[in-house]
Image (cartoon, rainbow, N blue to C red; front, side, top):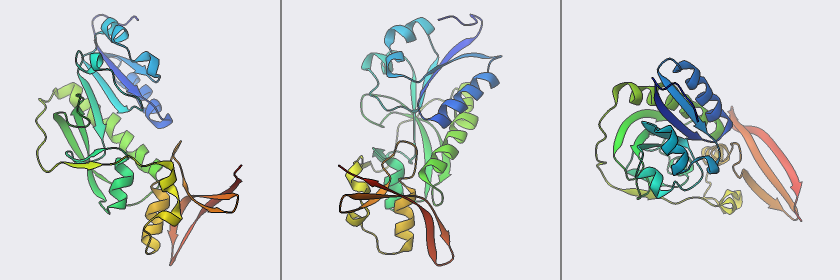
Length: 237
């Protein structure tokens, strides 16, 4: 792994198409100051690879796999969470925020440690999740993380501070919880929130079953006193 030895090295470990696109843009924007490496596979994130690169930071805008202990104990690893930590530690933060009708939140950049989402905080940025599909919201969050938060941390090197406040832990959702008939839906607002919060790349969309048919819902939006969107019907075995 080669790079300009006069520049500091930075690693971004991420997945999702929008994050990879923004990471590549950031690499071009920062090429005069940093060698920026982009990891998109679980196999890339090893102590050996990082030991060769010697990064000043390893950023995790979105990563689906467990980070090895030897990685976060030997390198400065920074995660990003879509809640005002310590509120909302745990899985499915966006979905849990919307279900709890918490639309004003923050994106928190924090030091990754052994305890999930419990590390010291580098930076928080206000963020709104009251409208739009999950994918649209993730894309907006990605823009903030790559255009503002990572550059700020690199430029200012803020000293992280201990989390404060009441610890609220979210539980990761399962695909079966996307069943509309099992959700607590009382009105159109609830239905709008439920469908849109599950509408993103590789996420289990909101659905109902009718016999052997499974109806999937997406692209929902408000239109006067009704909801309009897209549905797909598949036949289950």
